Length: 323
Image (tube, rainbow, N blue to C red; front, side, top):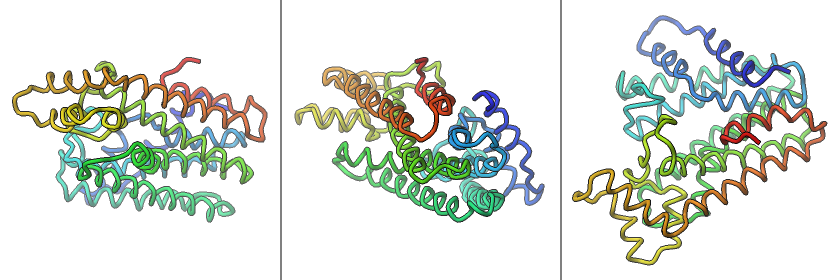
């Protein structure tokens, strides 16, 4: 089987070969712009790696791998409208460059293109793949709605937050892995296990993203403290709120909109609370639990251990781990 670097190159080449009509330009140009934006290609990589656990022939899975990436990018176009986001992956978002109406319609066309790619899936697996894809797509929408609901709620529990990210983040990973396993000919029991693997990996990944937003390195390409400045209910914020007394909760609730503080002071004030309440360690602990649980699931598959090496390598690289 190809190395993970070779797989990524195969995905990039496949996506680059996608041909869109020249006209109407304002419908199709933003699609090419979005797909050329790079990113980790996390979802198609997981799909192909899952297929590769059970089969050495990845070609039948290529259209589905492209479909989940196109679907993911479709959600980003609409997310940027909802978030009023001007940047995406270091360049102007489709919404900022072409406006709201173009981003909506081009996003709709991307969703249709994802389904057109699924038409190329082997017919004997079509029903299972479509059912998995549709469940995944609806769960992502549910997760996005819960995330928006949280903006209006004064109190969000850790359980509610974990359920939201399981839908918004993990569902797309779990669906991708399940589709890959199906196309590789995996037994139903292994498909269920891999779905749980990807769910746990997705939870660990999102919690790590929450942590890095406040405690990461700007060299990673992401400004530090963005979630704090937005007053976003992340795992860190929710955990802090659950451990704080009422005066401290008031600091957490109001600091981001305090007009007497600049951005640096706002971030420092909230992080001081996080540090005092041991929130970074509690978050790292939860990341570790989820990640180790994900890897342990791979041990239970009905295949020789060497068939899961590539998936393990990719999971570790995703979490920034060497061993």
